[in-house]
Length: 211
Ligand SMILES: [Zn+2]
Image 1 (cartoon, rainbow, N blue to C red):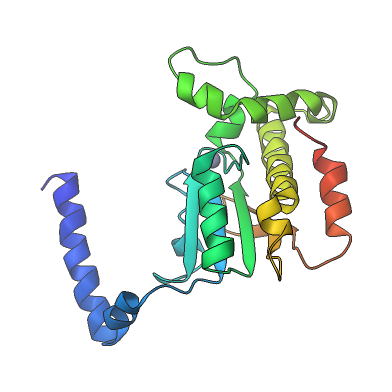
Image 2 (cartoon, rainbow, N blue to C red):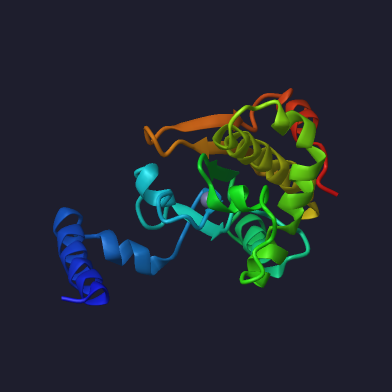
């Protein structure tokens, strides 16, 4: 059986099992969505938002891209934020990065001429890495530098989101959180929760501006 066929067979099994477990499940899905969380994560196949948080369809409004980046000038990520905040009225925006991120690692390497779209996309991350060069060089191994930049990148995206007019003008404004996922034990570490008043200070100090 080829891979797409296997996915379709698994889908049939999932639909049957879900309906058996909760007969009203699909009827509720048809009625509409009311997620309370916008999740901005990395496209990496090892970090599926719903799986690592045990969420069900309908729980998360999800946007994923390489290295979990948010660009105010990019209609893709900005439209997701706009819809989540203004229409779905989510109470929380979670940026979740992960250790061992290939997109973050790429930002520390010379651009790959075969990946022009990726290069353009991660350009702000490359700029952030340059501004943080001194701190990153304080870490001995490449792995440590990648992982530290992955954390600082999350904080930078949080800073941008908190500064976005879409977030600032919302009433009430959603809380913006910064998380990072560890591939080696499956645990999420909270870098900034959105609840503590000093979060914003930590965030600004740690990440500076990529501009
Ligand atoms: Zn990644």
